[in-house]
Length: 311
Image (cartoon, rainbow, N blue to C red; front, side, top):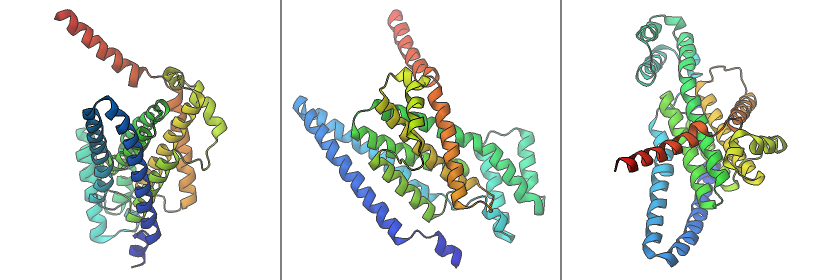
């Protein structure tokens, strides 16, 4: 009974989450109406099209991923150490099935995974090690790509509506994607805390807690990505802060699910997530735009040029 109580989010967390959602919604509506009024002066249909686009983005990029997470079962690798009997067997089988369905395994690896279920006392340790080794690279790719998009969108965009939509949609979708890849999600209290963090980050455009801004500025402006975008220091730093908060939120989510070390405290997990996030951000800022932006644009225009020659 104690464990169940602990997993339920406190009433103040729910109230705070709802309050932040209302404030974010009101801010979004206010800014969207200001842009819509400007578009109306050009043509009424442009205003309608803009509102329809906003509605589609909000429903598909925020509401759907936000609620979709709750359809995934609650679990974490840490629970395998405390589970026993049927519960332990059930989750070991679920982890095996998740690996077989969601990870590209060789026939030998598939047989190895199935064989873990026959090892009795060693099953959980073998599964945790294999699951973490195979799932982590998939998660890191998703996290890296999302953080890079957050940096580009919020550094280049000078509009608060785009920043709010970009931050909220990117972070909620990332939480949902992490739970889909793992096949399970954090408990309700942890999910609500993550959502509160996402909403608060969206409002203040970045959480400055424990961030070394002096170190971020040269990284954001002098890095290959910042130079390629041609952005000023203020915008680059804002984008870097938003990317870092996304990375921290993703690292916390990942550690909730994949951390099987029961000896680690919440403070140690928080420090671990910050170290992971900052290391990834440095990699993003040092990397150029060729792979994610320049190459696709060149390919697109090259395609049009070729089509023009044919016709």
